[in-house]
Amino acid sequence: YLPMAHGFLYLVAILDIASRKVLAWRLSNTLTTDFCLAALNEALARFGTPEIFNSDQGAQFSSGDWLDRLKATGCRISMDGKGRWVDNVFVERLWRSVKYEEVYLHAYRDGREAQRQLAAYFDTYNRRRLHQSLDYQTPDEVYFGARTDELAAVA
Image: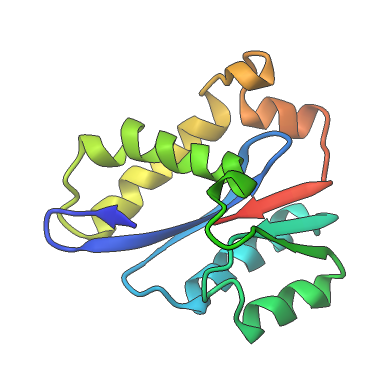
């Protein structure tokens, strides 16, 4: 979750593991499946279906609606072991980056400000931020340069 000046918001992101590209993301003030499905549907519409889709075992990712949507795409569904954050280390690293490079530096007044600031952050993250693990390329350079749709992750 993301702390704000008053309260907090939930953030979901759909991440391509091979490139570290954030394919879609959403904020919500409630931890429901709906906002997660909105991010998933955007990622699928814009970037297609991955071979494998991995998530943690949160209620929103083990709900019937979420699983039915993934099954309808034909991709294989993978879920982390219970309490095993290391199973989805790429998404956990994204959360660390988002929090320490953006969220903890600001006290968002409201959801609109958080939305605006995070949109700018993810744009920079995908298009300009070099990643050592990507041989100092950006996620966009890797994703669009040598596209690999083999694995996507969410948290």
